[in-house]
Length: 180
Length: 253
Image (cartoon, rainbow over all chains, first blue to last red; front, side, top):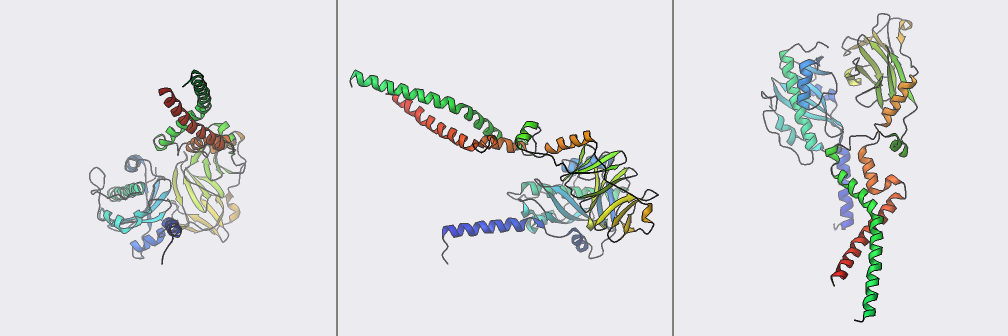
């Protein structure tokens, strides 16, 4: 079928708009993510307080302090799951992460609220994080390729990966449940 | 070419030059505004104009920005917890995040517990956000009131029942004691000085500096006629460039 340039333009515009509408939103409810991560048997949540040196360490990882003073986690013997938020440009990106024996097993965008950068939810991007861990400088031990046009979202995901790995290490090293 | 004709040509050029000069003077102010704001707009991110907000009262008045008169405030301990628009304040300190529909607030040991936006907010005495608990975190749905029992423990009332959290607010269980023993949080009129300070703070969070620079650049800052005046200034600049070139070419001959 022959499409006039005007119609083609309109079609492209509609495709773009529909992509943007679909792009932001809830991809998976946090409770569904946890249920999937623990095969339906979700452990009781625990709490890690971001106080003292831990607060400073988190600030150094994120470049700013975390929005709350305590974070919930779900933990079995070797695995821990986290639901964390980090702002991409203006809005928080809610992300689910699973750590297994100090290595990142899964990272998944659960709720994306920004108008740009939603490409980070695709497996071609998140697969890069698999088996990542923190080096001695508390940085990811591998290079994560960025996505053109999604720089801030990519940066947010890298920060969250490092944060979850750091918090998991803290869980295994210290008693983290004491409040300030 | 006769002497008379050359004189006529000189007069014509002088007249054109005078017009050129007046156009230049008229366009100068606009050129300065457009050029200065244009430079600033090129560096919006460097100067964080998109995240900084205008504090000037007269500019905020000019834009007609008013703080909401409708505020919900609860006195918890000796501090006011106030919801104004979507902003939540502990005394004068704004709590991170956006909120709506505050049900109540209490002081429980050293933690402020606020029922707002179908969630429970925990704050330190300094107003730092400890946690924001939502339905998915197990809090009861449809909280109508929040208070403390005779022992100081937190109780919430929903349309169905009364509930009590554990020490970490992670688990909630039904509370079957006498509701008459609960001291429920009730709205409290805000101290006038605090109200005025919060209204001032609210107004100072609304208008990004970038918006004002953009409006100055386009002329919208000066009202409905502003863009037309700036369009006229742009036409003057075009004419200036043409007349300037023409004068330069004539003088070379």
